Image (cartoon, rainbow, N blue to C red; front, side, top):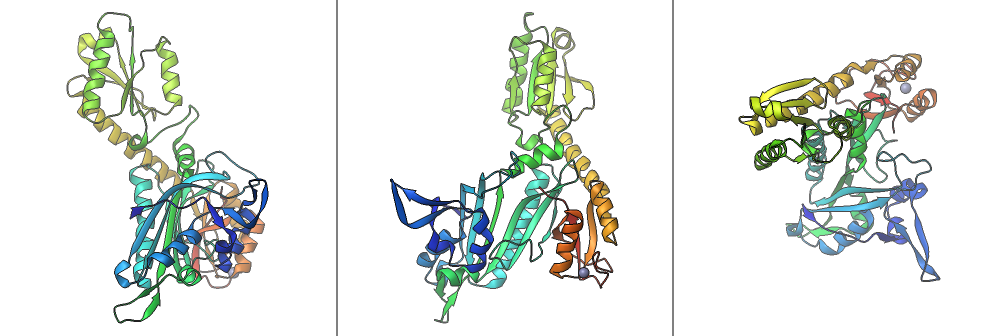
Length: 410
Ligand code: ZN
């Protein structure tokens, strides 16, 4: 992908070119009607997403099959007006990455849609230590203007779901609306196939609510700004701070993000402070440790203290960070698996959802039943399972067509 940047304000006429898109976003779009003390001839939408303005430019840039695929990525802020907001989870303005690609063939665009979903899933797992459910969204829950939307959903502590990333196959909906046409190898003029995908700062909310505990944040080591905090014990004693700095230097050299807290606060105060901030590993180093050539190490996920040799400290700490990452993932994965429960009736579904669970249940595929589930339980269809393993629809009892993960969502 190539990184690009497009304008924040989008002419309303662009927004209205794709009918389903404008209808879907209408309730959330902030519109600039006045500027420079005058009413604008054409109002401008504050981008809720950039398919339209990027589609407009793709229409100008794409001419031949040689121009394809065109793969763009933009890091920016967008705005979707919210009546109630929650920091990191649902805010009117948020920061994200939005990718937009155009391909000559439908299969290529579809494949890329699934590739990006997989990339997000791997990122969630390997970098954020966070298990997710992925799958296709129902028609009701899909992106406005998409042919198909795929999402990744993470289970928060309270059993609610957080949509943490989406990837959309847009077919020719936007290329037709914006004239994204190319001359193919056979000389004929064709419309391209587009797709888009995005993740936002909502992932920070997901980290907080997946790993955090009563003592505060628990940051996954791969993304923790400070991975190791060194707290000197009796730091005024000769040689203690120097030993801490030597240890920090050796860790830094091995690529570990480390800090020595040499402030005047007491060690106990420092322990609490860094625990609350979610620093994965704490090392205490005092005169007695130095004498024995050891350091005292604690993991943020709370498995007590361990005395380990100062020899090969960097290797040891790397191992601990890696074990901690794995443990965070396993803990969250276990919790999620334990709290995905089946249901065959609406009453069963409600009870499970009230208990803070995701519900895996059959669905006949009709919108009325999906609406009924929501009305009855405030749970929505998060994603559809890859295979239909249920027998009957949880709402009407007809044969199941899709097995769906239902949950209350942020
Ligand atoms: Zn049904």
